Length: 563
Image (cartoon, rainbow, N blue to C red):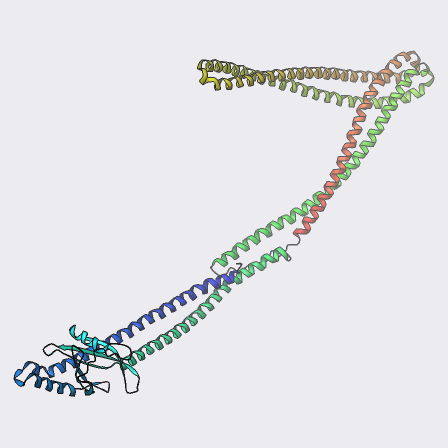
């Protein structure tokens, strides 16, 4: 269930009081009902007890009124005394809430002896008489009297021709075997009890309504307080959300700050947001300056690459021209060798060619010196390769020793497993496998050793070739110096060129060989220059991409306002 913080706080503030109010209302109503029912029950019981006490007192008065006739035999015969007692009991009355009460007398067989209001019943057996509710009234009164006196609830027709509740009480006059009883209407008691019960219910309903009203008032107050608290929480959150949303989606205003006037957690949130905004603003400012610097640097670097590209192209063109010149020098040298006999007729042309050859020779000497340096570096690499091969040989010796020792241990294990008999068979298989692995290790070590020896031999051959190349390079440098010296002599001795044709032819042949070497080196230089030009072009492309990226970065950081 996705709820806003406002809804959650409202629920947190309202649900517990509502639940508490409902619980307290239910508890109060339940307790009030229990108390009311208990009060009504106690009232009924008290009224019934009072009624029973009144009946008992009335009957005791009746018994006392005829007690002298029962006990004093001098007052006449038994029949006379009983007649007088009947007459007294017929005449006795008591007031039951305005109604006239009377007494009645039965024997233990249910025969009516005396009746205060209906003397026609006297002499009749009413033992099986039932009231309108089906209660054997006389029978139960006799049983209650024989039990020492007791009460019987029954129904009787009142003056409104309806059945109303009555409470009867009877006692046994043992000397004569009479059951003397009386009763009165308890409808008034029921009315009073019902009235009390209605009053209690009205009081409970009134208390319930007052409780509900008080609960609603309390809930209204709590809701108002909750609304105030929610607003105090959600308003700073809304401001923070608006500021963050403006930074993320709007103009990127990093100068906005949240209020920190209060001393609660929202103020701490505002302080944290303000600190975060300060940090981001500083970072954006630094990125902005860095982006400007990067943009400027990339533009300067792009200019440097443009100049480097132009220089590489010029170098490539000059290298091609040098290669062409070397080819021409080789052709010219060959022509000089073939035309040595005609040198005397081309002295002026030879002088010009010697000038050109002298310049090219200087360049060739530089190339040869570079070649000698490369050969020296290659020779050092070959020597390192030989040293590493020797180290590998030492490692192989250690491995071979380990393999021999493993083989020996496996052999000893096989011997011990053979001694162990059947119990060592599994171990013998393992020892055999270990010996096989040791044998394979020895074979592999031997093969690796053979390969390393071949590698060392190849390294030695390469080193020898490098030394030869180095010596040849040194010789070429020396010979180039001699050629240069010879050319100077040619220039100084143009008049004697005819006598030195043989030397010129020899020098021309050597120069042809050197020119071919220079031509090969110049071809490599041209290839390197081409690769350099291509790399420079790629670097230029990457630099342009970097310039575009720097511009995009600068444009992005300029979206944020930090002032």
